[in-house]
Every structure is written in C-alpha cells, then in structure tokens.
Image 1 (cartoon, rainbow, N blue to C red):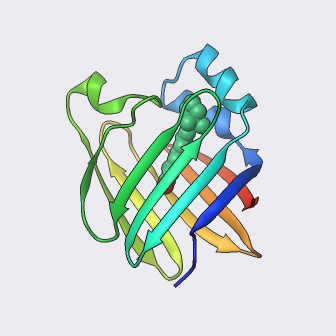
Image 2: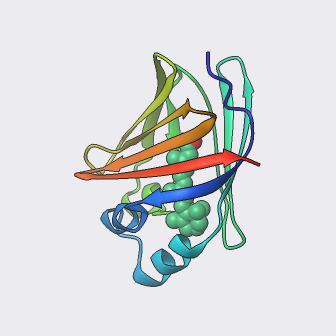
Amino acid sequence: PADFSGKWILETSDKFEEYLKVLNIDFATRKIAISLSQTKVVTQDGDKFEFKTLSTFRNYELAFTVGVEFDEYTKGLDNRNIKVGTPHVSLVTWEGDKLVCTQKGEKANRGWKHWIEDEKLYLELTCEDIVCIQVFKRK
Ligand code: RET
C-alpha cells in the first residue's frame, strides 16, 4: 500500500474557498483559511492513521482505522456535530491505493480521498457539487 507518512506542505489548492462556503463556513474564516500555509503530518501504522492539518491559525486532527466507522466532530472547521446535535459517521476504506472517506451527516455527498501520485500527496475534498483538490509536496 501507499506510504502516506511524513510531513507534507501545501503546494496548490483548487476550489478550497468554494468547499468551505458549501460547508457554511463564514466569510472571515474562509479568507483566513485560504491564505494559510498548511502542513499535513501523517502517521501510519498498518491501517491506523493520524492526519494532522497544521496552520498558524488553527489545526485539525483526525485519527481513524480503515474499515472502522467513527464519529467525527469537525471542530474548528464547520463544527458540524455541535450545530446539528448529531455526530457525523465517517468511514475510511481503501479503493486501490486511495484512502476514501465518506462523511455521512447533514451535508450530502460529503467525503474526501487521499492518494499519492508522482511523490505528491493529493487530497480531494467533496461536498454537495463542489470538489476541491489540494496537492502537497514532501517537506
Ligand atoms: C484549516 C485552518 C482553519 C480553517 C479551516 C481549515 C480546514 C481544514 C480542512 C482539513 C481537512 C482535512 C482532512 C484530513 C483527512 O485526513 C486549514 C485547519 C477551515 C478542511 C480531510
């Protein structure tokens, strides 16, 4: 399987603001978020993963095991389970060498995919009809 572990730095980001908007993240937070340098720190132990998205403004940390459903509270992003009182049930699976997450909740068609291509880390974030693509290079 692919080796995601290590430190990655954001190189390009396409439709990130549109993605944040469809999550109802406010204007001011969006403007800060799109201007930030982001670092991903990934640790991988078999099918157990930790993805840390780090920035000077706020961090987002996610830990999961592939194939095991988990409650996700998108703290500091759209804070989804606080708002609606129901946790998102998220599930990450392998599709070939891609890590694919479906985030079942209030928002339709929400999820993400992570994969490695040409030594870059790709993150595709989807919500409703918006698809954002971020590309990271090794730090
Ligand atoms: C930042 C900065 C604060 C504001 C927002 C952010 C968005 C982070 C996102 C992270 C997604 C991470 C995923 C990891 C998967 O393993 C950069 C923390 C809104 C959308 C899907």
